[in-house]
Image (cartoon, rainbow, N blue to C red; front, top):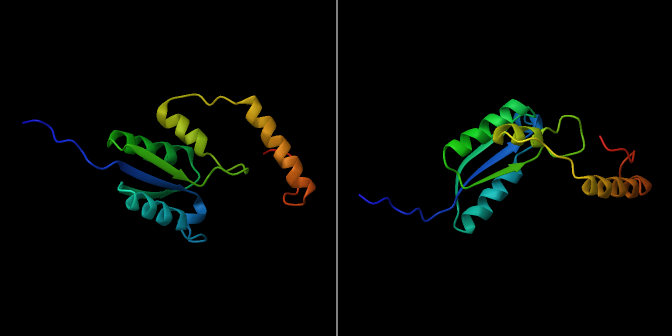
Amino acid sequence: MASRRRLQTLFDIISIGYELLDGRVLNTNARWLAEQISGLGGRVCRIVAVGDDVDEISSVIRDSLRRGIDWIITSGGLGPTYDDVTLQGVAKAVKRKLVQNRRAVEMLRERYRVLAEEGVVESPELT
């Protein structure tokens, strides 16, 4: 018997941050993303919230890959604080090394300098 062609693109949404798990923050990003994806004809298969933990992030991404998900969307965990480890978790899941883009770092330094001058952030230093 010939295999059937799948008509919908499959998505998993992974929301990252302990603040989601302890109830300090309502996960409105996942709801909005799911609504947009569904409205465009995609199918959200799973919405998962995990803490700011490299192994947890890596594990749920590997699970999505194992299940044949077409698109994995991560939300959260990409800020300028020490506990934002999303990139490390993704790298571990796909067994790749992170490489720093010097030009991007310089762009961030300049942006933080401006934000510090405007009083938006306390320090222009990258964390």
